Length: 211
Image (cartoon, rainbow, N blue to C red; front, side, top):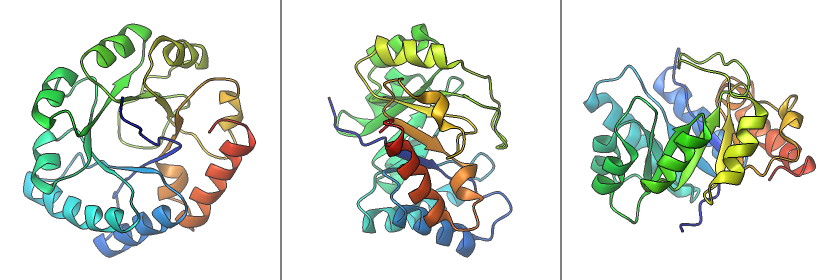
């Protein structure tokens, strides 16, 4: 099993940001202690996605943080990213694993124990589980209870990251659940200082014994 550090999983959102500001915020987040980075772009063309992914990957490599491409196996392979994350409506995990190869990271979204087990059996290295709280991102969200999150964590041997509206002020609801880490979008991306936001979120998660 691959050793994947999910402690602070940062998912980007470039909505309303000029590219230089977007890249600046990504780098600040990495400086703040992000352990794994996912580039999520729903609206870009393949060429635009690849172009941005190459720039983000260059920054991520400087900090030794793996880059995960959301949805798009072709983009991940084209730019040499460390992995891909597939959602429930994307390519099946087994197909993503076959295309990416055994050495790359494949993550999957799971909202039930059954989905979690299926993703694990098909070759997923980690799971994203949520949404724990309603989110402000454009992604369609279905709330997941902390009880379901606990059941998923206990059902599979791969790490599960909690996602959905999480920030330093509300992650205490996850106490006692054996998660692999916290996934954050807006709490870091929209913060006045993404570096400080990442540092504080990670520190709070450690304080609560979550990571």
